[in-house]
Image (tube, rainbow, N blue to C red; front, side, top):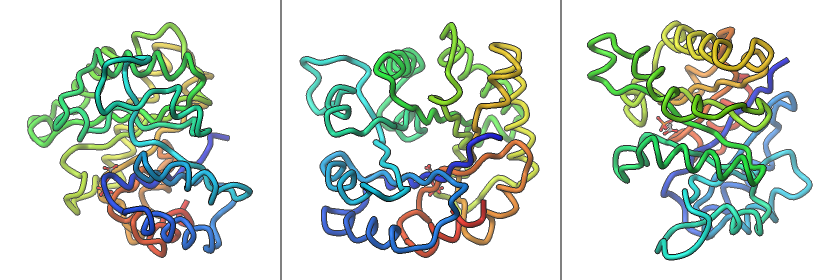
Length: 249
Ligand code: PGA
C-alpha cells in the first residue's frame, strides 16, 4: 500500500498568530488516520508549528531549502538549519520557485542531493505550463524535468521522495486538471520511475496532484489509481476546506 498524503502549501501567507490559529484549528478537526497530513508555514513560524504539532499526527513541511550547505547566500535557509528545528520534510521545485526565482534543474538537482544526504523527505514538484499542454507536449516536458533532476540520481528511496504533479496552468487558477488528465500523467510518471529505477520503487512511490484542488473536486481526483493525495495551495488556508480535502482521501 502506498502512503496517502495531503500537504498544505501555505506559500507566503499567514503571520505568526494566523499560522498558529490555522494549525490549532486543523488539529481540532477529525482527520482520516490513513492519510499523512502536512502543514507548511513560512520559515519564521516553523518552530512554533513543530511545537503545536507535537503529539499530533500532523507533520511540518518547509516550503523551500537552499541548494548550498552554508555560507554567503543571503536570505537562504539550509538543511542544517531546518534539521536543527526538527523539520525534515521540504518542498523542492515548486513552479513558483522555478519561474519567479529562476531555480533551474541544476539547482534543483543540488537541492535533491543535499536533502537526501541529510535524510530529508522531499516533495518534488514537476509540471508543464499552458503552452506545453496546448501543444500536447506535456509528457515530453515532464520526462525532461525528471531526466534533468531526479533521474540524475543513482537511486532513490521511495519513502523519502514524493512526486507532486502540478500542471502550472492549474495552480491558483481555479482550473484543475480533470481526474483523467491527472491519472494519465501520474501513470506516465510511475512508468518512467519503473524504467529508470525498478518496479518495486515505482509501486511504492507516492505521486500526489496539485493545482486548484477543492473540497468539491478532491474525491474524484484522489479516487484515481495512480493519485496518492494532493498538494493543496489556496484551499489549505481554510481549516474546514483542508480537512474536507484530507477526508476525501
Ligand atoms: P493551488 O496551489 O491549490 O492554490 O492551485 C497548489 C500549489 O501551488 O501547490
